[in-house]
Length: 165
Image (cartoon, rainbow, N blue to C red; front, side, top):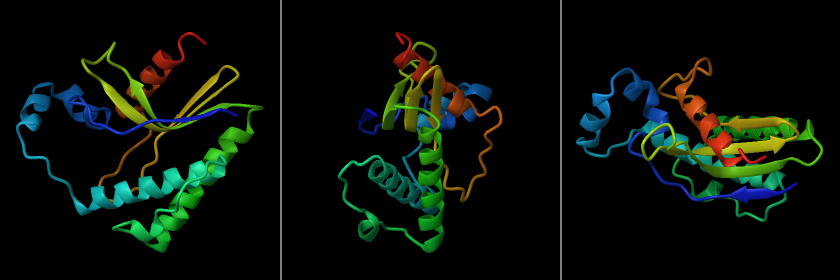
């Protein structure tokens, strides 16, 4: 099983805000003029993502340092949710012989969206199946998996990455 990972950054037309800019294209320019702020929910989600990334990398046998004591937000619910996420990833990997697994993989969908890219929390390539997983911690803003434009863009980025396969 091959494992790859990448660094984080943000796109002007981010996949996570695609529900907004697809419905109202001028909102991207208007939002770019606003100060860059965050919420406690977003900060907690960032901590949960860091913990989830650690647990998946540990599952994959990568030597990583436990971030728990350095997280700004942490509770038993977060521990349980990220355990469930890592278990889900383990189940997905177990379906295949030797999948390629990428954690925090940059996905470029700029062929479809100018300068478009995002980060797939976990991308699994096996046989004729491509799986893109995005962890949602679930506080503050409800996110549906149905017709999710962020995941559709990530899927396009993953297809671009593995088009040669």
